[in-house]
Image (cartoon, one colour):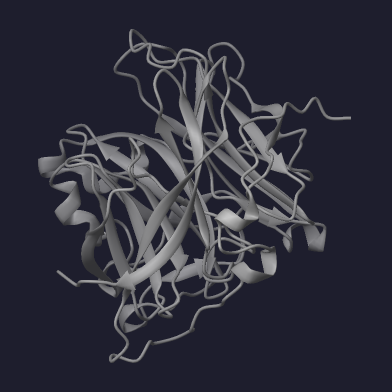
Length: 379
C-alpha cells in the first residue's frame, strides 16, 4: 500500500466545463495547415490549488500523463523554499490521482528521485523533472523515463547537469542511467560570443511529434541567456523528422546517448526572448487550429512567449512568433499541459494546464482550464 498523502482540494467537475479523459482527445491536423487557417492563442483560467505541502514548496511540475486510468506528474520538492543562501537541497516527488478527472483529489507516493552518492555530480540536490511513458520500449513492455536537473554541491554559482532514471512503474523503483549525466554544460555550444560560453542545463521534456521521439532541453549561457534546443537519441536508427525544407532528423527511442537534432539547435525562434535573458519551461502541444504550439516563460519581462508551427516541424525555421499569451494571474507563467495521451501531437489538444505559483509563503501547484482566441502574429 502506498504512503499517499491527500493534498490540495477536489474541484467540482462542473467548474471545468469538461469532464472525462475522452473529451481531451481532440486531435491535431497532421502535415501543412492551410495558409487561410489563422492561428489561435490559448487563454488560461486559474481554478485553484490542487497540490500543496505544508512542509515544502512544490514547483516545476512535469507534463501531466494519463496511463492505465491514473494521472501522474512529478515536481521539485524543496523544504527550504525561499532560502537562497546556498543551492536548496531539493528532491523530486511523484503525484497522482486515480480519479477520472484531473481535478483530483491528488495524492503523493513521496520521493521518486533523491540526491546521488557523495562526491557524485548529483550529490547535493535534484530538481526540475521531465517525464514520459514509452509503451513501445523494452519490446513493448513499456518504460517510464524521468529526467532531472542536479548539482554536486550547494555553492553559488554551481554547474547544473541533467540525469535520467527509468522504471517499469511510475511508483518506482527508479534506476539511474549509466550514461548520467546525460546532458551537461557542453550541451550548449551555441553560447559562444555574446552568450559568454556554456553555463548549465537543467530542464528536459520529451515528446512524440509526427511519430518521432524528441527531447527539448533548456541550456543557459554564462550571461543567463536561456534557449530551448531539440535533441534526439542516437541509440537507434535515425529517421527523417518533418520540418522546413525537409531538414532535421529524429529517433525511435528515448534512450541515451543523445545528439542535437539537425537544424534545430538552437531554436532560433527564441532569439527575441533570449535577448532579454530567459526562455524557460518551453512546452509543445497541439491546438484546435491544427498547428503545433510552443509556450514558455520569459524571465526578462515575465511574459509567456507563444509560437506556432503550421507544418508540425520543430526546426527553427518552422516557427512563427505570436503575441505573448495573457498573464494567468499567478506569480509565474510556466504553464504545463495536461495530456490525455503521449505528450506532443499524439496527446490531443489539452483542455487543462498546471503550473506552480508563489502563494506566499509556499509554492503550490494550480490547475488551469483553457479557452482559445484568435492569435496575433508578430514574427
